[in-house]
Amino acid sequence: MTLFVDTSAIIALIDRDDPAHAGVVDAFAQVSTEALVTHTYVVVETLAVVRRRFGPAVAADVIDRVLPRLDVVPVDAELHAAALSAFRERLDSSVSLVDRTSFALMHRAGIERTIAIDADFRTAGFATTP
Image: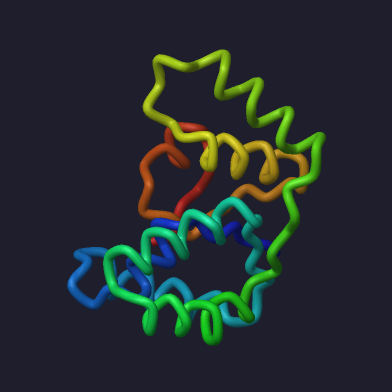
């Protein structure tokens, strides 16, 4: 089984003060034998947020210790176009282009579950952990 990993989960994983921290740590521990997938836009978003909020040392730790646990899928032209189209169709929504890209990847790969705090994944019909 494959799980998608969202930016919100990575942030909660490294931020001990995040209310979802314990649940995310447990979620990662429970799925230690499952494939964990994300995409390059999540990596870009995560590293920008982490460096800004927590500094370069924590960003380096994410690069060295978190990202190697994930299969990072490149966002190809087809995936980007699908996500951009979905984003354009719903500009009045608060769902980001990164999340639209995640949804498109999950649909394309048949991934039904995600480690995410972001409620947009549940609203889009995906099962979330924690």
